[in-house]
Every structure is written in C-alpha cells, then in structure tokens.
Image (cartoon, rainbow, N blue to C red; front, side, top):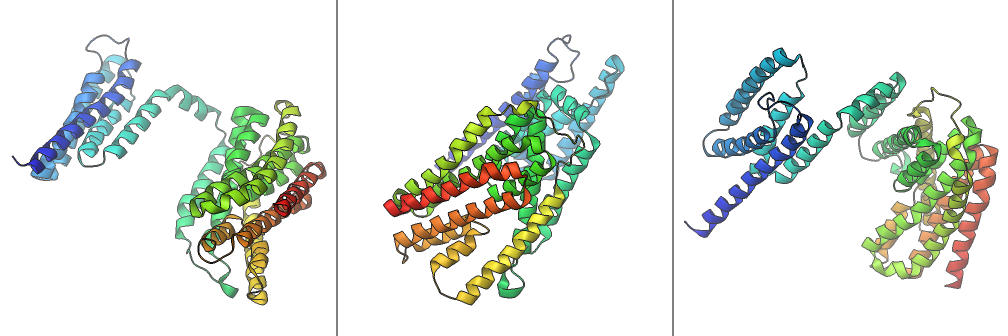
Length: 423
C-alpha cells in the first residue's frame, strides 16, 4: 500500500467517525426526549441514530465504488423499515407524529454527506436539526402566538427578497447609467427587513430592548433605512419618539466603526488619520443615545395600533423611489461638473451611501490619491450622509423627534470638522 492509499483510507475512517458522531448528536436529543420510556418501546434512540449515521457513510462509500443507485435503494429500505416501526408504535401509543421517522432519514443523509466530502455542511445541518427538535415547545408556542397578519408579512418579505430580488437585472439603466434595479430593490428589501426585525424585537423583548436591538442591527447594514422607518413610526406613535430618537442616534453612530473596519482592510494607513475624526463623531452620537435610552421608561409605552404592519412595505417602496431620485441627481451633478473634484463627488455620493465612496477613496489612496484628500473626502461623505438623515427626520418624523435628533447630528458633523482641522 502506498502513502496515497494510506492517507485516503485514513481520511475515510475519519469521515465515518464523523458520520457516527453526527448520528449521535441527533440521537442524543431524541433519546433525552424519550428517556422515561420503557426499554424497547422506542423506535430509535442514541444507538440507532448513531448506527444510521454510520450506515449512511458506509452506503456512500459503496455507492462511490459501485453504483450511485445503491444510495437510493438503501434510503428506500430505511424509509420502509422506519414506516413499519412507526405503524407498530402508533398502534401502541396513538402517537401519530412522524418526527422520529423524518429524523432517521435526515441522519442517514447526514452520514452520506459527511463521507462524500461535505463534512462541514453535514455537521452544521446536524446541529440545526438537533436545535429544531429540541425546541418543539417553543416553536409551537410561537406559532400559537403568531397572528395571521404577521404570517402574511413574513410571506411577503420572502416574496420580495428570495423570489423577486434575484430576478432583477444587476446592471445600470437610464440617463448616465444611474439606475440599477437590483440595488434599488435591495434597499427596499433592506428597509422592509429592518421593519420586520424591529416589529418582532419590540414584541418579544419589549419596546426599549427591541428598539436597541433593531438599531444595532440596522447600523451594521443601513442606518438611513432605519432613520426613515423610525421617522414614520414616530408620527404613528408619538409617545415612542424619545426611544426612537435614541435608536436613530445609535444606528447612525454605528456607521462609523463599521467604516473603520472596512477601510482597515482596504488601506490600513488611512486609519491613524481617520480614526480620531470618526470616533469623535461616533461618540457625539452614542452618548446622547445612551442617555436618552437610559432615562426612558420604554416598556411602559405600548403601541396604539395593535394591527400595525410588521413589514411597512409602503415605506420601503417610498424609500426605493427616493433612492432612485437621489441616484439620478448624484450622476447628473457628477456629469455636469465633470472632473471638478473628488470632494464634490464625495458630497454627492454621501447623499445616498458612505461605503461606496469610502471604498473608492481608500483604494485610490493606495495608488495615486493623496491621503489628506482621501480623509477629507470620507469626512465630507459621512457629514453629508449624517445631514441627509437629519433632514429625513425633520421632514418625515414627529417634531419632538426632530428636536432631539437635529442638534446632536449637527454637533457630530461640527466636532468631526474641528478634529480634522486641528489634525
């Protein structure tokens, strides 16, 4: 036997052990659930599930050596055997659940995957299977509490994201090639997702903790989308304005550390010059957000509209239309001014997005662009983006929300400019 055959054989043995272990993971959960059953009254426990996982691995080896049809025949035989055992058990206990049968079939497939070179995928699927099986009570309770309009909202979110989004062309159209249907609809999906996550976060964790979670989640993706959504919500629920203000400030502040992380990958030399400016703007937003959130008794604030839409699709579509208009305006200004300067481009780009122009300047600063110009351009983009979100709050949100947001955002932009000037 040469070294290659030895290594191959050792690899198969290791994968078979993984197949056995994955079966044991699922079997441990099933065995624990039926731990009080009489010996011999269970269709399958930890030993059976472990052996079924090993069986899947062995059949996968035989299928690779002889014929893939062996895998199908073995699976059919297992299904027939499991169904016979299920019928016998059902006559004795009147339990018509087929969860155990399905779990056995999944375990067989996991064992086959582990030996077929997909051990990581099989391990992840085994853990997910065990978690789903172990949370039967919680899942059933959640389903009982789920309202019909909440289920409809979840299905619509899946429709606009999983079904519609991949069908849209990811290329530019219109004047100056400004409009990208995929990118515009992606922002519609994003703001709808933020609304959906925020609705259930508030419902499960309470108003105060729910807004905190949603704001951090949105700050890692799109603080502009959350600003628009919370501004609309403040008009519908004026008593929630203080908490919504803290959420907007927290989300907008989270944009800055996210920016540093991205730029540290593109051009680490920018970070020492940019971090004092960015961190100052972040702290200026974070401190008032923390103070407002701490002083609000948000859990006593109940939404006045119990049938509120978790998806807020109309707001998302409105945001998509606004984004399309700003994209056109951005490209028009760039076309009219030509090569008037990177700083004008930074200001125009900051109206819609900070990441795109920041990545562009970060890459260019590694080749030909002066570091100071890159830092100033990123500052302009972040400042303009912050002021645009402030304008959205004033134009769309409740007056009390604007009173809390506008001064803080203006101070953030002012302090960022002062730090840049001093440095």
